[in-house]
Image (cartoon, rainbow over the protein chains, first blue to last red):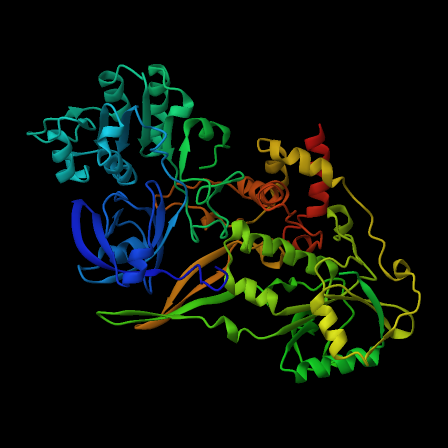
Length: 279
Length: 342
């Protein structure tokens, strides 16, 4: 380990690009070097540092499931310098990737449970990995419910996969858009995620809830889950903070003594409640 | 290894510097530069000054430079090549005249750069190739508080050889590590048998100003204490404290791009800056200066002790000397010890 440069990224080629929503793209990435591809493993929940060489690095989750072999995917919104540079890349271009970093969703511990996934907007990508991971091991879990909302119909990401989940008999998908965000032919719900959640979900029995979304959604979703009787240790979320290194050295992602890059990004609500409110 | 005492005459130290330089080692020592004392490369002992309490900036840049290239790259339309940094090209360094607080600072840096067995190999290699010949402090000022944070103006920890100036311009040389022993073995004719000396007589008597145990015990629970707001009202977020600090390790990573080639670098950063933690969305977990001041102090006295088993402050007082708003860490820690004990 000591001879290895921990800052050196893998080089990966963009295999395909999907336009998910306005300014949101998904890249499917393959390792250029066969040895890297063979040696690489990750678990669901982990993240990486993606870079356009010459422009810098940006942190996001690995949005594909470890059960899908031979590639990884990331979904990002064009927002800052690096994501803008990424957004301009074409199929065939080479980008850098460092990872995987961080902890994981403990899906082995969830065996025999119902799973309730709750996501808002651009926060479906961190959850997509664990959703597919569980769907690919479907026999391990009981009911799978996905509640997903966005501001408008256009802002819903992974539209193809939403259709697929909608038609799967073993998935209960509930989609919603904020009031005013609907189109004339919208067939899903209209309302904010916490409201729809309180109307559609009636039980916390033997269920694990996984929540990912903007802070305002999280804030109003947690009381709904508590009212449903979810225990704090059965509610999971992922945190994000600005990062540079991804492995506990650059010093900026910590919330109190907890480093999101090493101790997270996956936390239970119980752990979250022990953290100072600095995220 | 057991610490061995030797006598090193002033003239022998001068010769030693010449010899080490001849070996191809880079020698860094305190020199007077623009009216202030800073570490810089020297080729002879005469360039060095001994008239300093501590240098303005710490010695950390010798091992952890302000800007460090991580690797080079070349890009074409269809290809990207990463050219690895040759860590074998990192030169052998002798750091002469580091104060015991400077030497202790490397411990804290090393704890971060090797945390959880994940080694920053560039830092590790530089530290490995650095031999520290420290010099004890014979004087101190009102900003110094090493003795309050487990340090001591004559402490050997962190140095490979520690020199203490005794009578007739001679030095007591304490040989602390194998790296130090290697120099003594190689230049044995320069190191003489030490006579019995009372080292204490020649080092400064820095008073203990607060009880570190109270701070270490109580700070983890003081996140919501009002003290952070009160203490940081004057802070102008300039980051000088972090830049002069021997233990501040926080860094940024940026790409320098000259068209089709460039390099990725890591460079010093500071938790005192508002932009340090800001998200692309505009959300900032540490929105106001009191949160950043709390982070700075809690990182050093709560998070590092718990996560890396090292206190992130060596009591050199540089932050207080460099602060344009005259924030004094020693005074703030005294105040903190009182507040958290309530």
